[in-house]
Length: 403
Image 1 (cartoon, helix red, strand yellow):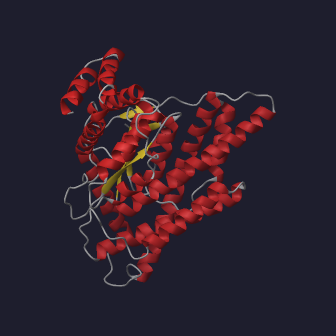
Image 2 (cartoon, helix red, strand yellow):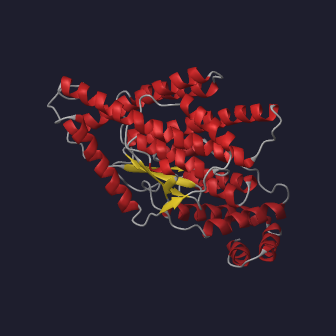
Image 3 (tube, one colour):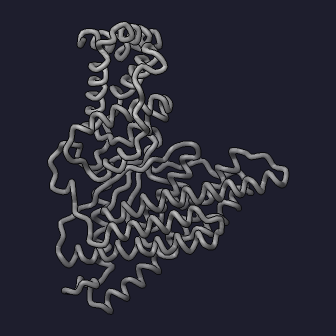
């Protein structure tokens, strides 16, 4: 059945327009014996995407953006089948695979429609650009592929997730603030301890990277919020608006903190925006796009300012504690103080980011135009402030981010 697949793919994938897709789908619909070979061809296209730097979540996200949910489900089905052939996968891959949509049944709603959907998906997969790799592809040998976690990491992350989940669920702003601040304090302490222990043991661990989805609507405001969270956690974020994600560069404990905190703050901000809109509608104003855009822009900008303000205090406190203790809590020779250790890690992160993205640009995003939205967003950010943050001033404070 390979000749039928080749003929259908040649008709649909290497020509423009719906007519070419219809021709390819008609050929496949008339050849039921080609079904298995058609899916194997799709798995091959997915495998090529891994070689170009893509991860499972990246593919599904892009298919949703460029096509629709139906084709995203088909992509998830192909991804699950392709990755099942590997004995081991990087931890982030396993987490992304766990979030794939359920597998799609074959030939729904009919053979022609199913074949047409697959061919349109394959056309997108074949035209994927190469992107910056953020870890080895599956099946690639790498010593750092399965870095063992710190002894307290699973328990610490479980506790942080529980605190953030409570912050997202509560209807009381003061409680959400306290829970989120406590979660950030745990992140900060864990990160600083990791940095000191790495310095004491002369660890050769290098910064890594991960990609986090930044999807429409209001993606510029979300990208600024992610940039602020990344900077506060000693990472650097580079936004790719065309592909719907930011790449965050940093050491592993800090990357985990950014993923957890950004997701939680986005949930909290969206909930606060919905409540503010309800108040606006009660006073006779209709919901508007400009209100939401202005709300999220103010929320991101204000959080960036507060994160930066608390960063210096948190680091200064940790420096005092470290000097008094003579090094990390586990003992051993002093590292010469916390600030030189953190500065060395900052340099390593910057060098890695510049190596990955030698041609970044600074993009000025559209400003807010709704005063009520800006005011409510600022107030929501004040309620979600992070008392335990640390790091550098977010680059998004003046409305500019790296892209």
